[in-house]
Image 1: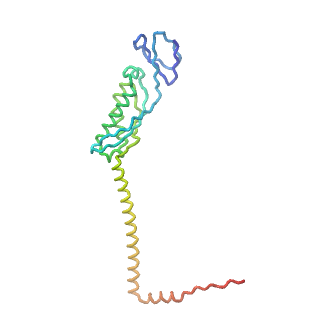
Image 2: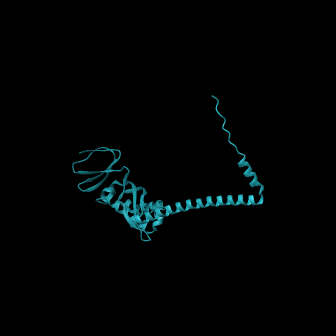
Image 3: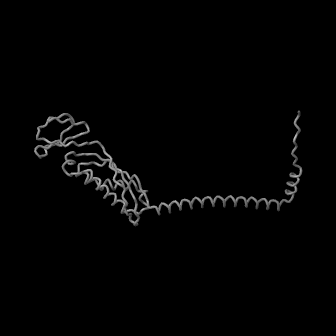
Amino acid sequence: MKHTLYPWERGVRFDRGVLVGEVGPGRHRLPMRAVLHRVDIRPRTLTPAAQDVPTSDGVLVRVTVVVRWAVSSPTKFVVESASPEGELYTAVQLALRGAVLTRAHSAIDAEREAIAAEVTAGVAARAEELGVSVAEVAVRDVVMPGELRRAALAELVAASEGRAALERARGETAALRSLLNAARLAEEHPALLELRALQTATTVVVDRPKRA
């Protein structure tokens, strides 16, 4: 029987139920009794469903991660598990849960990279057993409970209103200081008031008639 494997494929060959070995890309003629399992070794992306994980201070946080992985050992990938991708999925979920449980909710978003590194380390052993290499883990979403989001929004609004009130107070203080300085100057130099009154009285606006 002829089999053609593409550059991104590897074949795991069995003869009468016995593992024979791996077959690389190309065209292969195998006996009828041989069974060839094709394995795609191109990089893949795994996005486990978001899960609500309790933090160290008892807050349920919804976290989503993205995992980039690829098959590193086609033989292990075929032999070690009936559902290697499903087992990788479970390992990622458990590692993520462990990383979040050790942190307070306020630290989750700020420590995304550290959490991703812990998840990568946490799945490394099981991934190797499954014939998989994990290239990257990234924390995609961190969603806090609605109550905390509303509290954070209220805090931002209060801070903004506080800054606006401070600016108004500064403006009023500057205006009062200007009036106080003017009053002090007038008290010390009364002639300035008379000069100002004279300037006001002698200011004349002349509108010249337009020539026809």
